[in-house]
Each structure stands twice: as C-alpha cells, then as structure tokens.
Amino acid sequence: QVQLVESGGGLVQAGGSLRLSCAASGRTFSSYGMGWFRQAPGKEREFVVTISWNGAYTYYADSVRGRFTISRDSAKNTVYLQMNSLKPEDTAVYYCAAATRPYYVGVYEADFGSWGQGTQVTVSS
Image (cartoon, rainbow, N blue to C red; front, side):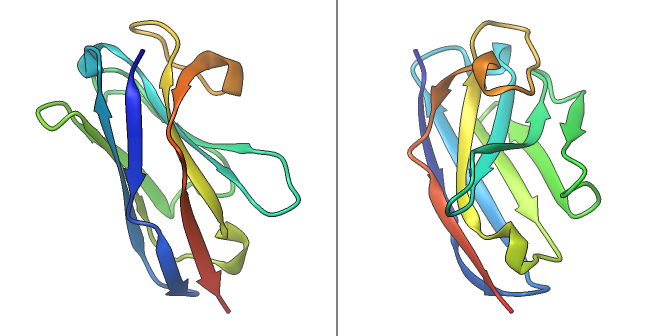
C-alpha cells in the first residue's frame, strides 16, 4: 500500500494557475502509474489525467487537455499537476491516486488502489 498526500489547492480567479503536488510513500513509487481525479459538488468523481510509471506516457481528459500538465519526480516520490487557464468549472476536490499494480496505466477509478485525502481547488469567476 502507498500513502498519498496532496497539497497546493486553494482559491484562484478564472484564468489563473495552481500547481498541485502529491507526495507518495510506502512502496516503490517509480514502478507505479499515477493519476489525478476530481469531484465537484453534487457530481461523481471524474478522471482528469494519468501518467505512466516512467513518465513517458500521459493521457488527459478532454476537458483539461491543453491546460493541465502532469509530471512526476521519482527522486522526490512526487507527482505534480500544473493547472493553467483555470475555469470556474474546474472547481472540485482533486485527488491523486496510485495504480493497483506495477507498470500499469489506468484511467478508471478501479485501476487505482491508493488514494489521497484530496485538496480543494476553487476557481472564482
């Protein structure tokens, strides 16, 4: 099992930027794909982006492609989500997650077995 702790959320005006971080501990971080999901008030949790164990492959939801960038630093056991050109509809609790098994890249919630506690992102209009 891996422990994940997100940080970097906050309140930002539309058009602004935020950078989320997710620090991992408890197992070999570099062998696992990672992802970000989000849940807006009254809505189901949705996929945002995934990154492979070595960072070579990424896949974004259509709603964030071109605005968000995922990256990872294996030396720091941390994955990042750079969010630019934020919109009010990006307001949500953002969760990072680790894949259920090594060398696996997932896009569905069931593909991820460890979750952080979430960090709130609020974008004002």
